Length: 178
Image 1 (cartoon, rainbow, N blue to C red):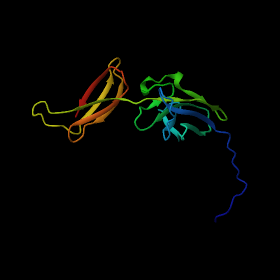
Image 2 (image 1 turned 180 degrees about the horizontal axis):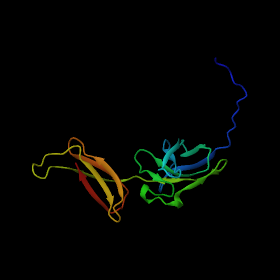
Image 3 (image 1 turned 90 degrees about the vertical axis):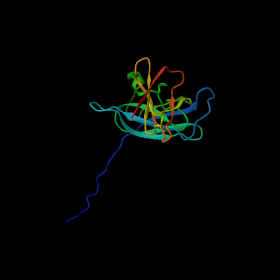
Image 4 (image 1 turned 90 degrees about the horizontal axis):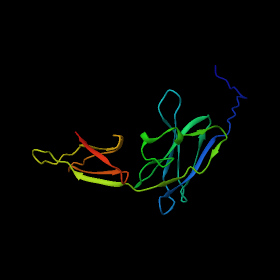
């Protein structure tokens, strides 16, 4: 039959913390409501999301869920601005070992700050090259011209229009695929 086991105590060590501020590049205006994500790269697997925090009215955040020694990268996302990884990179493929924070229990890593910026926009309409009919549901992808790295993607509306947000001043190749 059932019973009660008492005295089963658990002790959890101190978490590691990542703290910082999110501001607008140039003006330094704090960005409230931005989501800052932490990802971990355990050996033998791919990057995995582990936690996030939302910035307060001063643009500040604290991520405090890590209890194991691990390698972490941090990304910010918010409406009307490009996603950005810590170290100022906007493209996952550009991340290197120098962009990773090595965290262990009890460590607080401060000033993991972001200066985010608004994207540039590429807009247009996709039509059938024979009939001129507007084409909805077409995938529009942007690749960096220098090295063919994927940068952004969207799908055309039922009216064949698209609005693609990209990193400003980047040489791009645009591809449409149905």
